[in-house]
Length: 407
Image 1 (tube, rainbow, N blue to C red):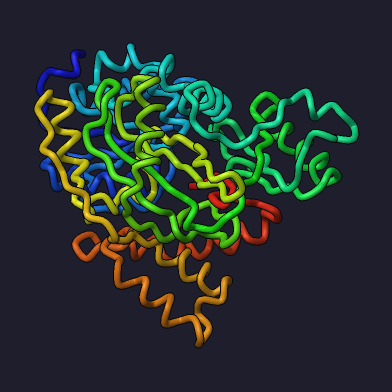
Image 2: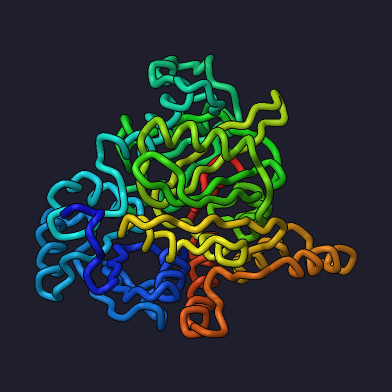
């Protein structure tokens, strides 16, 4: 299907995902779309009033996933709908079957020939390096054969090049390693979980949330449509967060320029968030991750003046997108995880609590909570605490955004 034809019945099919999917569904509904969710497990978006219908399927890793998705489209008269993959396995599935799925949907992502440079971290680092952008040091696999591991500088991070199946490593986003003995043990486990060819050993970049920057936007055939930049100031867990918990919009031209250079080089199409960290040791802004899908703090965009739902409508139907002026200094918060992180970091102690509370004055959007769509927040709050308690007992040494890994 030519994506420049009018979208039939103004429908969008969201494939998988969690908090970013919920925020996008709400934005799409405000833009007048009917939103359908196809997912292999129940998430907060499943309870949203913004979602007209939830369809359960076998998931992106099922061997007949494309056949099943086509069957869902035909059985529910979804032909002509916009299709947005909203989690990593779904992104790869749709991208690799881009031509086939385009006969049924208006596919809002690039084909795999282009998108693999964003999805695979090893390829993303190589592309960024070739473009002259800053990247963390990534150790060659050949250096792991040295029994003394002389080339490795600790601490470092072991992480998967792509997160396609759920296991300890992909759930944790990465593992911090502080010495050679720890490396040998964790590297062996990582290889068993995802395969040696998919394990990256990366330099760990020091610094707190002030150093963590993001670019987020919607792209149309290699050019930006709307975008914003933000600082990811707090995360959970505190030192090495797998999930941002407090994000504030900010004017970050260096991050925007670096992201646009990278995304133009791969002719990106669709939603994307690119994460960077400023390395205080050499002063270089370094690319950490490129997420070509909805990201968990996508809801902040509406408070900052970016209407992704309306922008997607314009791109899909070949209409110009109105210019948006981004408001700086507005915040998004993931309440449950931010409170736990605040307690762990001492921000809830008497001498610090006023300073912590003051940061809430900037908050305009929440990860799940919404007065006009309350059920997802009600359902997700106890589930989030349960997940945190479970993972806390199951994942020693896990890490995330503090070293360049994030949910």
